[in-house]
Image (tube, rainbow over the protein chains, first blue to last red):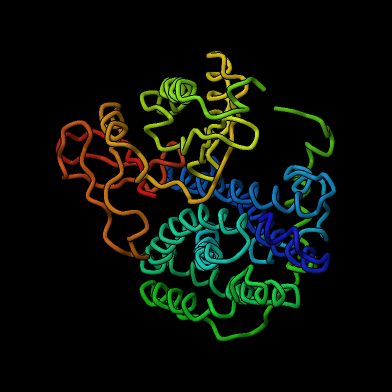
Length: 261
Length: 170
């Protein structure tokens, strides 16, 4: 970390900060969404599973936002970044801020995201930024476990009853357009790819789509035809849903900034 | 900073620190020490004197902070106030680092130790063959991939009918 960031010009440091915020905010918002299942899971095992996955994601967010705070250099720690930023400062993709919906929608989103994160972190481990590579090395194992768990449930629901199939099909139609944003990149990403700091996300896409197709085939569902490609979260342009998530998540630390547990 | 921390590492001090670490147990699984769990990576001479290097197990594991605090307290109580505590994430912790003694302690506590190679299982590969820690039977099945803590999954034994925790292979 020290080797790479110390020699960086300000623009490159800013691009790295964007990258880290995007990863950290994805993990934070999805972790927060998943935590809403606690005590409401369809079975006690799934309740525990979703809570565990939420915990993994928030753990990853903590490491990433801690690093973002150090890169920013304004003395903000991970809590300050999580609880004292407004919606337009968040850099997560729209997929993770959509309302969690029913279990089918939650598990399908988890499958799409975990499979993407497993591939991304897997490649990130080999890149030049030591801090990101170390965080990726830990996170990739957790995301592989999430992808497997969610993938098994996608097959079970798709290949289950008429009702579970219907719900999964509805979730697929709603969520699929949002998956494209996971593979979008801009100037900041291109700089980071050129600097050897992050993998080229486009190169990860064929394997991701292959694994998704395999699971969808087993689930008896077809990937929808492309309609629209909603995006913007990575640049701070969010749906109306993020505001509600933040209102709940940030309410306490904003009312009582120095509150401790 | 004390005299020995500034100069060459003192072997008796290093041995003493290891002996203290041996007494620090995992807060969730109080039979296994932080050494046998593979959390302690090294006791070494750092820039600011002697330091204990530890690694987190799961990124979001709430026990990690408790373990840090427990190690700090144990070192302070034993008079090693000058010894630092450093957290390193890379290379990532793996269940391979649980010692053979640690595996025996887990089994005795009713938790099946991890088997197989971490990360080898494909998206829908075969599940691990897990042995029941109570009766030793391999006739077991997984109830839930996630358990009471991030590091465990929930299993049951079809031979003795007892449920048990399995330490996930990571």
